[in-house]
Length: 351
Image 1: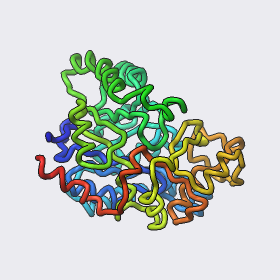
Image 2: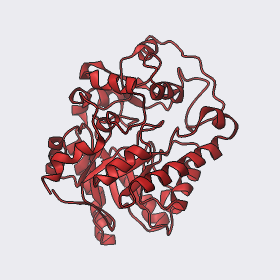
Image 3: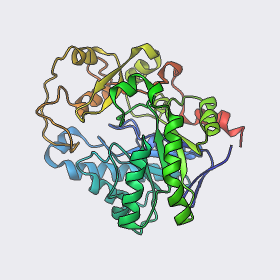
């Protein structure tokens, strides 16, 4: 098993922790992964308090992100630290500016195409990792970055339809993942990258994202041709993830047959666990909510059936009836809560 190279960074363990929002992936989890030799990642969405966000969402988000980055640095001073920034965020530019000011190592950006990212991070030295789920998306990013900024990515996260979180797949592709196997997506992304890698004299690492819950899953992705892996669901069920223990227990008790597909207020399909909240939404009920701030630029708050921030905050605080449990397809293999570093123990034997 080889280290993962991200530009001039060398990651001992080829594992990148996913940035799971609304306080799942905060400093404690990111630092634990970084200490173990992977890339620890803070999610930049939903870090602030509800009360402060109502009066100044921008400032509160900024202050909490700064606090989390500095805390993670203190807990893992020699580790590699990233921040996940959704393109869909209404404060995207400001969040990127914080990452530059705080000198994070890596920015991972998806939930949209991060076309402006190189311009916002110019001369910072931060390694840039877009998230794509098709060769077409890769082509758009490459052409735009090349034309506007004369750069290409340092690495790319390649998502398959078995992933959790917001995905750029159709509902049919999510329900029938055999329609878009990740092997095909990898092939298409490689084909788009090849001429740019040749022109820039630079090798772009490819990081596979879907259904990774064990060392065997990591090795399978490496054998497939990926240089590293992107792990989400497994790290939700760790001691260091930020959600309440009652919510973690919902995850570890879940089976694959508990997964259903919803459309989030962003209009994208997401896999979630069937809970009382989800049953209401599947029955076309609308969950009342107020929206004093717009955290997602594409959110149609007046038309949405529910507020995803409210639902994820319920998950954070252990309200299992009102919570939303976003999940990847490997949840059936996640059946205990562990220290994050335990995930890496079998991999250390392979170095």
